[in-house]
Figure 1 (tube, helix red, strand yellow):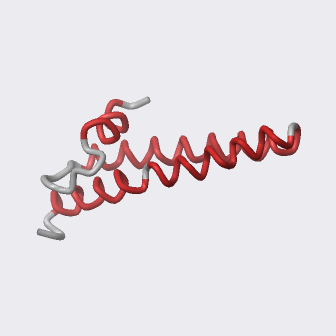
Figure 2 (tube, one colour):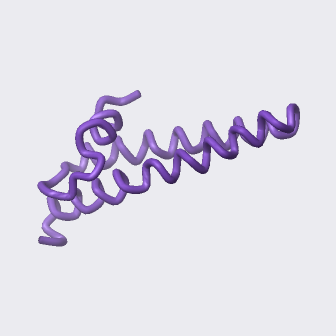
Length: 87
């Protein structure tokens, strides 16, 4: 995993103060999307091969989105603040 992605989750989970650079935001979003794709493919493939395992990965996929909703919004707010779009 990328240090930017892990840093946002560990140190800035609900941090709406300050600003984030474009590099921080971009790497977070890239790793978020990579993980979504991997979980989605695993859920789809395993769902067709082993039904219950696919269901488990679908649940994990949904929990991933729920758990990273707050840090995603927080880094977006900090990025927009860094760009000067919001105060």
